[in-house]
Structures are given as C-alpha cells and as structure tokens.
Image 1 (cartoon, protein in one colour):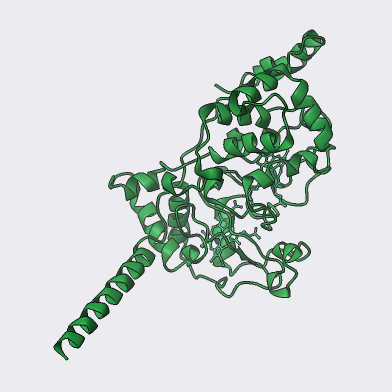
Image 2: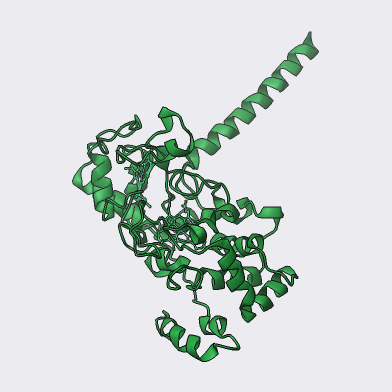
Length: 357
Ligand code: HEC
Ligand code: HEC
C-alpha cells in the first residue's frame, strides 16, 4: 500500500509540475522578444550572406515587371516601413490594388501570408506578385529569360547554388531568403524586457498593461511579433470576404490576418483596406467597438478608454520601433549588358542617384 501511495504522489507531483510550467509560460509571456532560434528555415539551414544579397538584387530589380519600373521595393519600400504609405499601391499598369500593401517585418516566423492567408511559405509567396497582372505583370517565362541573360545574376546564381541554369524555384529561394532576413527585434520594448528599465517611458509601460489588459489587444496580438497568426473580422469589410474566399465557410467570411505589430508606427496607413490613416485612428476605432461590417469578433466591443489611456497605448505601440536599414544594392552593375550597356546605364543611373545613405 505504502509503495502505491508513494507512486501516486510522485505521479501527481510530476503532472502538477508540468501544468504549472505550462501555465507559467502562457501567463507571463503574452508578448515578448523574437528568438532567432525559433525560425524554421527550409531544410533547417539559415541562408548565407551571398544568398540574401542575391535576393536583395532581385527585390530591387525594376526590370522584373511589365512596365520595367516596378520592383518589390516600389510597394514594399524599406524607407516606408516596407509599405509605400499609400492606402492602395499602384500596380505595374497604373491600377490601384484592391488591398492595402502590408509591411514585411519578421515574416521569418510566419507561415500565414497575404491578408487572407492564401500562401503558407515565403518560397511559395514571393513569385506571385511578379506574375500577377495587377501587380508586377511579368510572365514567368519572361522573368526567367531576363534573369538568365543578366551576367551578374549568372555569376551570383552559380556562386550561391552551384548551377549553370537558373530556374524559378531558385529565384523564389533567393527572394524568400532576403525577405526572411528583414528582422526587427531590438526596439525600446525589447530592451525594457531585457532589463533596461529606462528604455520605456511610464506612459509606454502603462500602455503594455492596457494592451494586455483592459484594451484586450493581446488576445489577438500576442507572442514575439504581436500576432496570433489567425484571422478575425473587426467589422471593416463589407465586400471583400478575406479568409472566406480561401476557406469557403460563412464563419470565415470577412476575416483577415492579424498583422504583426513590429515597427507599427512606420507602417501606416492601416488595415487590409488602408482605411485608418494613423495609430490614433486605429485606437479610436477599437475604442468605439470596431466597424459595422458582418461577422465581427466577439472581442471587438467598446473599450471605454480614457484619453490618456489612448495616448499610453500609442506610446507603447511606438516603442515597438526598431527600423531595419537596408543598404540598396548597386543596381548599375545589374543593368549593364554587353550589347546595350550604354543605354541601360543612363536609364538606371536615376535609381542610383535616388539611393538613400
Ligand atoms: C504593386 C504593389 C506590390 C508589389 C510590386 C509587390 N507587392 Fe507584395 N504585396 C502587395 C499587396 C497589396 C499585398 C497584400 C495582398 C493580399 O493580401 O491579397 C502584398 C503582400 C505581400 C506579402 C505577404 C505579407 C504578409 O504579411 O502577409 C509578401 C511577403 C510580399 N507581398 C512580398 C513581395 C515581394 C517579394 C515582391 C516582389 C517580388 C512584392 N511583394 C511585390 C503589394 C505589392
Ligand atoms: C479580435 C482580434 C483582435 C483584437 C482584440 C485586436 N486586434 Fe488589432 N487587428 C486584428 C486584425 C484581424 C487586424 C486586421 C484587420 C483588417 O485589416 O481587417 C488588426 C489590425 C491592427 C492594426 C493595423 C496593423 C496594420 O499593419 O495594418 C493595428 C495597429 C492593431 N490591430 C492594433 C490593435 C490594438 C492596439 C488593439 C487593442 C486596442 C487591437 N489591435 C485589438 C485583430 C485584433
């Protein structure tokens, strides 16, 4: 009997201990600092500097578009929080897009891409805007042709992947490696978590409390990148069915991906339709109980925040800022080709002169 009791208590304590540690993780780390060790790289291998640089060349290459003037950076501009500051970006044909351009911070931790989550890896996602007629509008065939005849690409692809023939899969690998390297994790908020008590103002510290408590933001914006990687309706959309287009269930209609909030003060305007111009408008929107559209999440209700609480929340959101400085590649090298070198050089010299220091 004694032995039975002993075993019972040992098992009981083990279960108790496991439960305690699980609860502890959930309750103390609602929002935290991104951990580089948690990134799941394809084939479990971090990219080399050379692969990221190759992706960067492709990212800034305006020739990968129907009009020869639209690169990824046109819409996802590093100087505009990897957006372009517009409600709706313009595609290669001058057309306004249906949805607002999202930022690209810390997607290394994400397997839900696009506002409706229709791509599940960066490798799968990055070629879609090139061939999309509304965005860059360049067929895969033309893209491959262009990349393959560019001497610098030939040299770099051989160096990085040891190949003589460039294919679409390798182009997507390189672009994804670059996008995955856009990482922000040393904001004042992170320095505060690491023990620097002076990194945040008292207002921002109160903002954290509100974010995790009264304002209920962390119910959806949690974890290191302040997203639950899920989909909700805030009552904004009335036409665009969002996730409901991909998963054809009425419960999914009008839901959109919860965007990560790293560098959020740099990435306005906000929401899938770019309808809210600044952070004050965003907090006011939540404070008023969200929009009037269908399928609204039950968490989105009037918050009764005082004016100073609205300011404190903004102070906290602004403390998530740690800009990612991208040194633009020397595109001139890319655009030189043996036959038509002269003409192209002058065409792209303007781009070089627009380089930011
Ligand atoms: C003409 C503007 C435009 C261009 C050019 C463009 N994008 Fe986008 N990008 C968008 C828009 C708009 C969305 C959101 C579309 C949606 O959700 O339906 C988006 C979404 C994304 C996403 C998903 C982000 C997230 O949080 O879910 C990634 C990654 C991305 N683009 C990378 C790229 C890359 C890489 C290139 C170049 C090959 C590129 N984009 C070119 C406008 C653009
Ligand atoms: C029910 C889940 C939920 C709650 C609660 C919530 N959010 Fe959101 N948040 C979302 C979703 C989903 C979106 C995108 C919605 C859309 O575009 O239609 C979003 C968008 C945002 C954006 C715009 C980001 C961008 O890049 O466009 C900000 C800023 C934001 N939320 C901050 C907050 C704050 C602050 C609170 C608390 C007051 C909060 N959220 C509460 C789910 C939530």
